[in-house]
Length: 630
Image (cartoon, rainbow, N blue to C red):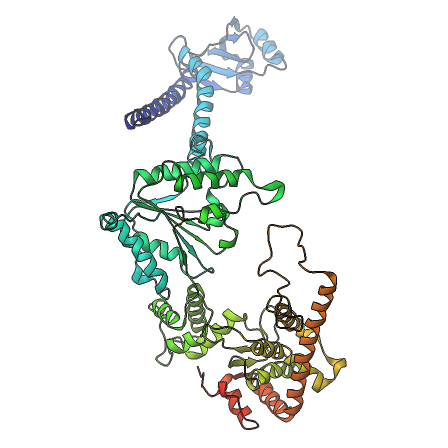
């Protein structure tokens, strides 16, 4: 349909709607005028007052009535009084007006019968056509409102149209300078911006513009923010939508939306299409109940064709984001569709500093608060986590009626984001003491073992989620390979709480507090045996690195005899580490009791203070020499 035809149809619809409204309003005015005619106009052109039935009957009995004209239906009458006045009366038809008729005869009143007074022609037309037209008008108003509503009847013809948000001038408000902590990904994407700004520079040497860029990374690392920055830097039109917006209940709708999206993108080329959470539509084909999902697979097939089919999509760059690249279809990931796959990983120490500086622009920090110290205490935090951290600290500051965010608020916010919300301290002294020994067991082994991360904090203040206390370490920033000694020390630390309970209270008094610790132990030990070859079973991997999530039945890759040996090896590793944990607790029993007394009094010990106390009783490993004071 041409643009002129669209404009003509729009004008016709507008004029038709105006005519309907004008007609209905005119008929309403006519009826309001016509309804007044029967009560005010008479055949003889004279006005008549109205009296009641009782008053008429009294006038007849008093011989004041000269003449009366009764309507044949017995519902009304018009009387002429002896003083010359004319009056109109509404009669009671159900009793036949017997009392009135008797009084008229007794007083010799002239009685005449005439046909009922008929309404005017205008009133008849108005009453005949107005009600149906009024109903039609109300119906049109309802349909018009529904047609403007999302998913209404008026959108039936546009059911297969794309729902992408379109920004013709790319006013995303985000530039590369607003994205911090992911410099490697920014450098990769800078070339895409250059492609869009200066395509001749690359085509002159035979280079082709990339058709797709796939951003892969954990949630909250800034994938969507990067896509906005690309559009903002390049200054080109920008389409944005989620992968779930393609898929509908009806087969074929998603494919139609893909066609419409790329058609609009080609009309606005060069431009960018950003598809967030593309795994919602790009999952592997042929999987799921019954062999697959017809609607999703047809949508994916259409997307594959549009990105690199017979016609191609010159000038259109597709930027997609996902945190599940393992479930994407292989045809979607090949070069020619997504030419570049950029990993947006968690920020390192320097990256976290830059991110914190960005989010601290509108926060009032105390002069003693160090951005560097916050970055050191937040390894593994994504950009969204750091933003949430400063926001939680600001909320705590306002709740405590302080003017600026201090070190205490930052520390409490870190614990709240990592562990959970603080609850009321334990009141039961026995339970509090047992919790203190459990956490001191973890913290003491963390401090005394050589291949563990430095202790950051130990506390017995309960947290939401059922945590009565916790011992927290700071993971190392260095990228390296974990050794067998490191994994064994991790298991020993995890068993330190249970070991301290048994040494101090006896095996009969151990409780359920170590359930999560035992799960962690089983996971690490089984990985050592089945995947890493760190047991007496030899250099063999008995399980793949990743189970097939699309298979309903998991098949073991080893015999039952090997399975029994694997279980035995896992138990041996756990028992060896547990015996080591108990031995360390027994050798440092006086130190353990001293630490518990201090923890019961203060309820929280930071890593530096804890190491100072331990150093008074024994020599610390070399890894503990560096101070990590916040």
